[in-house]
Length: 354
Image (cartoon, rainbow, N blue to C red; front, top):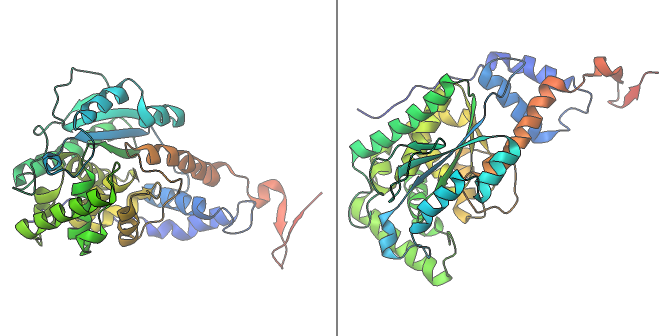
C-alpha cells in the first residue's frame, strides 16, 4: 500500500472575506504585492481573519552521505558534525539568523557519522550513520526511509503540541546536493544532467563527474511509480526526515517555510506523497544552486527573497520569516481606510479628509 498522510484542504470559503479585509487597508489594492499573498495564505491555513504566528521553530536536520565516496563533493564529511556542534553553540549562518529573527533553533541528528553528547537543542533521530552509497545500493531500505519520515512527523507533532504553528526547515550534510539532484530528476522527469550544479564548490569538470555518477545511479536502480521507493533509493536521511516533518506540519495546518535546494528536494518527495502539502508552504528564497529554480517552478512556488544565497542550513527560511511577520502585521495591524479617515474616490485616487 502506498505511503499516505492526510492533509486538509485550505478553507477557501473565507477567501473573499480575507481579500476584502486586505483590500480595505489604507493602500492601493495589491500595492504590497507578495506580502498580501502571504497574509492571505496565513489566514487560509488557519481559517481565520486574524491569524497568529506562535512559537516559531527552526529545524536544521543533518545527515552524512556515502555517495561522497564517489568524489561528488570537494568537502570532507567531517564538516557535517563539526558544523552541527557550531550550530548548537549558536554559530554559523543559521545560529546567527535564528537568533536575529526570533526562531527557536534545534539541530536534528538524522544520520550523522558522529556520536553527539546530549544537548538541550539537539534532537536524536539517528536512523543509521549516514545513507548508503546509492551508486552501489539503495541509500536506505524502505523501513529506514519510513522510520526517518516518521521521526520527522514525531518531531513536528511534539512542537505542535507545545503551541508551535510555524516551522522552518534547514539541513546540514556534506554531499547532499547529489541526492537532491537525483530526486529533482526522478520526481519531475528532467534529465539528470540539467539538475546538477557545483554544490559547495565543484569545478566544471567536477560537476560533469558528479552528473555521470548520478546518471549511472539512476540507470542502476531505475525510477519507481512509488514515491517512497524513489526516496529510499536516492534520498538522504535528513531529506526523508524533512519530508515527513513537512507532511506532518501540513496535516496539522502549520505554516511551513522551506529553505533552498535540499529542503525543496524534500518538499518534492512530500509533494509526490501528497500534493496538498504545497498549500502550506512559504518558499523562502531563490537559491543560486541552478536546480532550485526548476524545483520551485515545478511546485508552482514563488520565492519571497532572491539574495544570492546558497548556504543552506535554513538561513533563507530564517531571513524570510521577517517578511512573514510583516505580512501578519499587514492583515492584523495595518490601518484600514475607515480607521485612517482615508477614502477612495471614483477614479481610485486617494484623498485625506481633514
